[in-house]
Image (tube, rainbow, N blue to C red):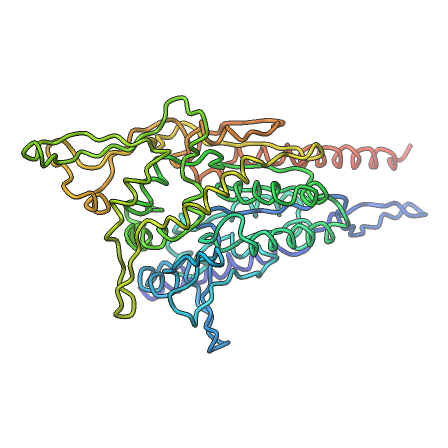
Length: 474
């Protein structure tokens, strides 16, 4: 048993070494013929490439907790497989401050930060980089990992032409700190690549963040960005998943892996105070082909408790949210804290929706949209049943939902991801789920095509062949 564990650990260490070596500066060798027919190989740094900036989505960034009273305290709290629930409740449960617009930890001594290691790539690579995760290969936390590997193998260099942007995804997609951070990252990538414009690849909610930035900083976006490739963005919201997340929580993984992850209800108590979640509610101004709905089987006290099906438009569920969450609360350090539906957050998110609708793509920026397809994706939601109806609406929060599905990536419907509102160069559907799009080979081929990697590689091979021909003896 011990020998097997040692072998597994050695395998993990070898993998870390390979990744470190892969991240080093790659060079290509060029043959040059000198006088007298002697060939000399020299290393030449590959240049001329535009930088790529990867922007993560909801839950797609490593978060650390630090204590103001103890500068040495630094604990990864998201993602954390071992002791997930305990540390999540202790450090990430938060309250929205309507005076500042920020989500703030319940413990005043705690601040949540995103690690900047590896030029921002560490925070969006493997979300729990512990040896435990590598041994079990818990793939649900391998986030941008495969895409980073693909880009490095294609010649991109970390810190020169490849960067990552992780952020505190609890906050609003338009909050100052997030906007300033994205601008700083764009400037860094722009300067590091020699003044060349940056190509952004965003995933999921990261697309809304980029849209907010583009809407609020249009000239800066035009100055620094050449191409924006958007993957699985809920442009018009994610009706089934987001409506339900505010009522019963959000479960990132299922099956065996869920035993290691934050529970649905623990996650719920965070999301009720998260502006980013409210900003992904279904857009009430979008013309859905068929309006999404929320259904509740309720006991009618005036008719001897007979079950009746009550319908709510999913784009306007305020009364349901308010009634269902009116008694919601959490326990923290012996105190009871009320967590009803937050109207202040809802009003903030409504303003964010207007900012998103005002976003315009600069003429100089090329936009591409990749969306997932062929997966059952929650759309309508139903709570209770005719045989087991809901009495008090607060019971909804402790009821498992029943979904009506549409086509999409399992999280965002195609109808929402395709409705970007921009003049896209291409929109392409890939048969993959929401997270699976980040490691899909078909997606990688599209990225290389749109980034010009294939064409550049072909040109180099052709030039190399010509060079050999030129130097061949007559």
